[in-house]
Image 1 (tube, rainbow over the protein chains, first blue to last red):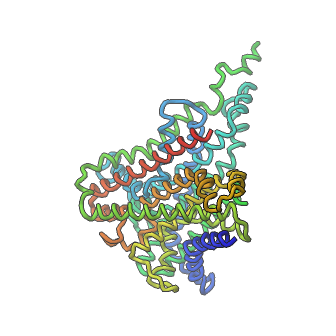
Image 2 (image 1 turned 90 degrees about the horizontal axis):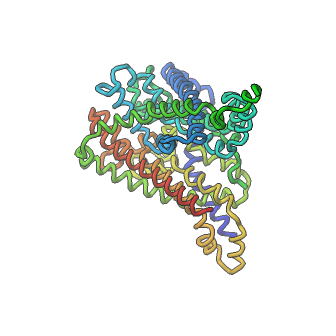
Image 3 (image 1 turned 60 degrees about the horizontal axis):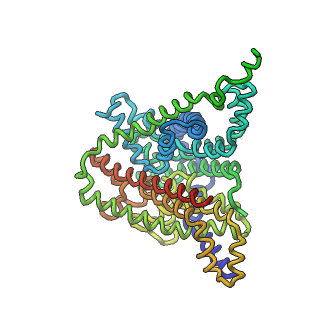
Length: 258
Length: 269
């Protein structure tokens, strides 16, 4: 009995010290004087521009990775071809790679003297878009692949023998089965795209009011000793994260809570 | 007969899903352009081990590996404990705690670093200042790697048959022995795979540590921050060389996890 309570105490204590206390404290500091002053510190032109940049990056990366994610999952699960194993392995790479390495790789490729250098890609929005796409690439694939494996091909074969075209089969049979997995992947992709820092930081050139995303803005404010501004922007990002978390909990299949 | 020819596809299987050429072609092309081409360019740029055998580079690499090892060990214990609490324990607010575990995945890393700095930094209201120390680094890395072990162990623990544990207990095994002999062997592959993911994440982490570490060379500079520093001083060759080292570690961990999964599926059935 004592062991049970001790374990509960240790587990919850770990979470409280590491997660809840720091985040709660920043929220409290930001809203200490109410929502009004907190909003005023976020509503500066630079901050709003940073928010806009972040939303643009997300708006491009998420649809691109969603379409790719579904196609790639189909390619991995439904087809046998040489190199399938490599595709499967490469998809996981962005999960294990340091964001700084990702940024550097893009910089080396598209920067001055690079193989594809000199097209205004790095230190500009296109480079940041590529970085965001890179780091948020695996999520839809990883969520859709197990579902595709699970449902098997029987229903698709039936549809095909009944004369459905490939597209009809996908729209009427496959898509309804993978819809929720795709959506869950989209939520994860969005969270990652909104919050990406390292890779974007390397390729952006950090021009305030131009190539500064919201995460970069947080760092910039903190390093200029504007704690209030940094906290306010951080809280804004944290709220977006909490919204994603809420969606994640709603969409996720129950995986082991009693 | 004409109607039949319409209904029955000429080559069964060819129409099973979207035209194979389309999905394979597009996804290979996309992967090559987005992931492989930049990494190839990076490998091309990194020539020679000279750039990473400088004292500063080796110090950063050594610190990173040591910290990641500690992070992996702490996660193995704490992650298993949290997973156990979520699956086997019952208390009010359990669903909330379960959702909370995903928070480090959802929260931007720079925000994670900033919040830790607010509570455990120079202006700490609890009187703990971990800024610019290795303790601060450890805290930041533990924050971002928290979900890995919990999320790999939790489903396995949930599926685990409790009859064996009951049998062990009825035969007089203590709770500790039961855990060690019955539960641990079943969840060990999951723990290891979570630990490997946490290790890989810790090796490459940048956003969460960049503010709290202070980036003091030889003291609190981890390898990702070192790469960034090299880049800012215009030494992209040195940055690329250190990056390739990080890249190889990531590859190695991925391969190890893959091998572990294959081993488990072979011995499971």
